[in-house]
Length: 347
Image 1 (cartoon, rainbow, N blue to C red):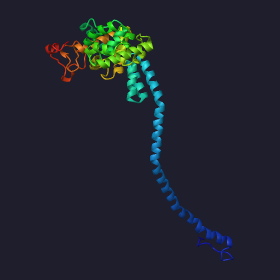
Image 2: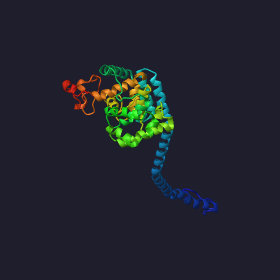
Image 3: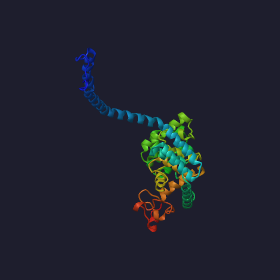
């Protein structure tokens, strides 16, 4: 609007240009006011769009994070392995520090466990293991496998027959079995009815006859009737697992190995050496505590201790030479702590 104090000149009416300018002023000033609702609408629309897009953005972010974590895992594993390997060659404090560092790099409990295992047992653990080995050797001075055998083939077959039965029963039938069928080829070609009659004392004799004949036939087909000398080849045989394979390696071929049966798993778990139900983990953990030359003797000692003293249901803790070293002594009330009663449980 023109100023009220403005003085007009010769012509009192505004010129065309002045009129245009004057008339245009209210329109131009009104433009911002009309745009305000548009801006508000735009802001509202933007806010709505952002709100609606948020779940999608979150999903995208999560997906990206998962992808990144997945891609990074091999690197984390490599870091854990490298730290564990370094720690294994250093002293106990360095081992613990490296294990913690590897666990942090790995970012998960599972990777932390891998790093700690890679670092190996600390000095106190190995010293305790040596003390336990000495105590067990004193209790069982001449540990031997309780399955009778004269060759790798005989031990392999005897181990298969020992499933769900006592070693003593297997030892009753194997001399008769091998006298009649001395080689793998003979076992594979046996009369099933004759073999079933021989194997009756071990239980499940029909099934075990099929197993022995199939195992023998596989030895003939793949290994010229000979028992292979490697873990990988042994566990590829029918009905042969890590326990049986390591038993054969350690006792028939004098190859350092830990065979984890129910007794070894139970005793190792009670000594805090490994999980009771994880065969491979217990095998690895027990092996890490001892030198390779001691693996087979330790294995036999743990089996004997599990059979004679550290029973499944009621261990004879009061008569156990490991009581002072065992964190499970008494087994929460299940073990017999009274020395006289415990001695009566010994086998």
